Length: 258
Image 1 (cartoon, rainbow, N blue to C red):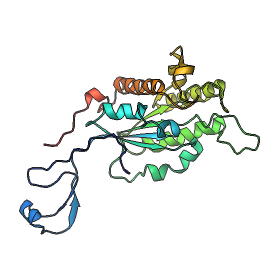
Image 2 (cartoon, rainbow, N blue to C red):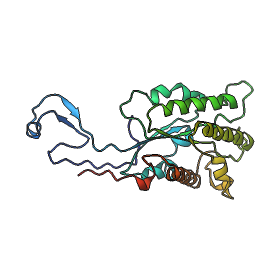
Image 3 (tube, helix red, strand yellow):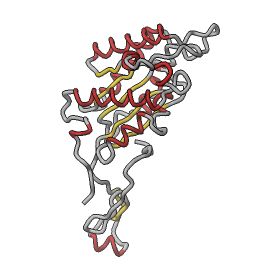
Image 4 (tube, rainbow, N blue to C red):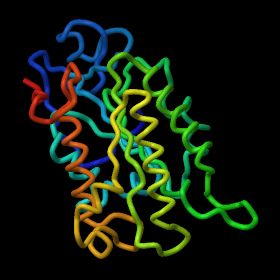
């Protein structure tokens, strides 16, 4: 995977043979290594933690800001899983489908344990008269999400997928709650068909009586209150899933170097 997004555990310690974890060493005995001799350099890695990838548009891209839902998850999973952000401002599902092979190569030696996917906000915007906007017709959106799910599920037998639907909006800009709900319902229906986990953010947000004024910073991007709802819903899904191994935070070991 590409460079890891903070906050992450940054401790680097040496093993008993003097080889630095996560550093480079020369192949050979510890004594030879300390003297600078030995053959080719090989990469040393520590215990392999599960890798979680957050994939989506700006709702994902902004999730590692202060009190964002990605930052909340990274804090909870510190020393238990590595969380990577692949969030692209302004993207819709049509753009996402075009880069699946680049972002999630099937021949990678290490595949993610979990991918949380969010698309639908841009897709569900009103169609512009000239057809140039980010709008994606509902049938195409469903097929794009199907392609994303198929690709991610094919990465490995233990790669788990969770889809987030678009949240409601306060109907500023070019969005309506009627359209958001249609796209959210279609996403959930697809997930049921494909037996993957779905979180209906339209429904989750509306459980907060004051969602319209407390869950967003600008009418569509998430405030700390909105982010807490997203993180809570993700943790709930991970806790209730019957996956083996479990990816719930309290079920994962703490990976520390000796």
